[in-house]
Amino acid sequence: MDNQQKDLKQNPKNPLRNNKLGRNLLIFLVIFIVIISFFNFIKIGSAVREEKVSYTTFLQMVEKDQISKVIIRGQVIEGKVSDRYIVKTFAPMIQSLSRC
Image 1 (tube, one colour):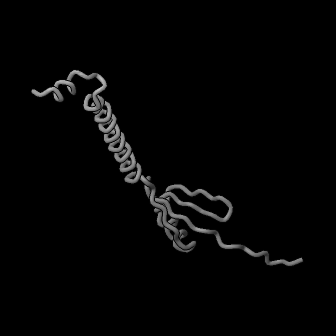
Image 2 (cartoon, rainbow, N blue to C red; image 1 turned 180 degrees about the horizontal axis):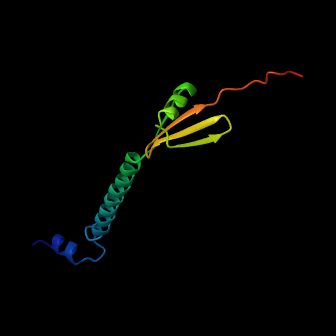
Image 3 (cartoon, rainbow, N blue to C red; image 1 turned 90 degrees about the vertical axis):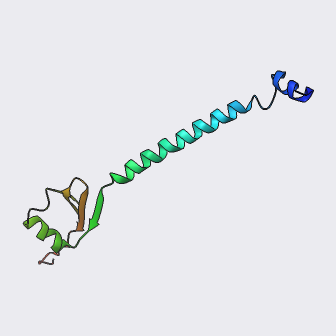
C-alpha cells in the first residue's frame, strides 16, 4: 500500500468516510419518495367520481331508486349513487306565475 492510501484510511476528516452520511441521506430520501408516492397512489385510487347530469336524468335516477341520498344546497343538487359515485345537477329556476 502506498502512503496516499494509508493517509486516506487513517485521516478521520477523509471525504470518503463522510460519504456514509451522504449515502444514508440518499437512502432516506428514496424511502421518503417511495412512501409519498404510495400514499398518493392510494389517494387517487379512492377518489370519489362526480358526474354532472341533467335535471331530467337526475329525476329518472331517483324514480328508479338508483340514488340513495340527496343533498340540496341552493340550486345545486347532489345524489349519492354509491360510495364512490356522485351525480350533480342544478335545479331549474321556477318563476312566479303572479306578477305584482
